[in-house]
Length: 258
Image (tube, rainbow, N blue to C red):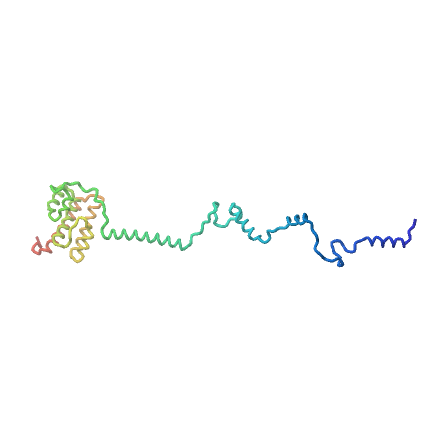
């Protein structure tokens, strides 16, 4: 059966009448607006999907960073050790302070040694080659020094020379010089005083230079590392005797030339 065009037109109009007036997802401008009704089950589902952490994101990130640092994770800062402790670099001012302290201590030690040397506190051990000689009945060298004012040093010197104890004889000659200076009131004898202290007491005396030379020869002989030979002793002997004679002659001009 053949349909006429009028029938086709009517059929097309009927199909168009069945279509919605607006496109899907759009609300007709004729429809009044109002709150949509949502059931409780749907609302609970929507609430579960909402992220409430947006407002405190910075705080959460900071807490997360601290937690990772506490667990040992994350990026380490320069200078951080594996144990977690941070070693701060030493400041240049601290290094300079330490160096200054070390230099000050070194300078103090040097000054102490210089002062010790100048005031004569240095005690050098005696010559190990000094001959052990028993000096008459007075009990030895210590007894002579303890009673220097009354000691007969000329007799002790002669005994040491007879026994060829030349190093000891040089020391006895030096004690004879000190005894002469003490008798004339130029120095005050004391066993605990040093040779340099005696030299300072002779600052205004004409015998200071001769005494310093005698002191040098005595120290070389007594604190040296070898015994005084016979030749050396007889070379030094007249120098000590001349100094003793000069000291006594200055105090008593009548003794001059004796």
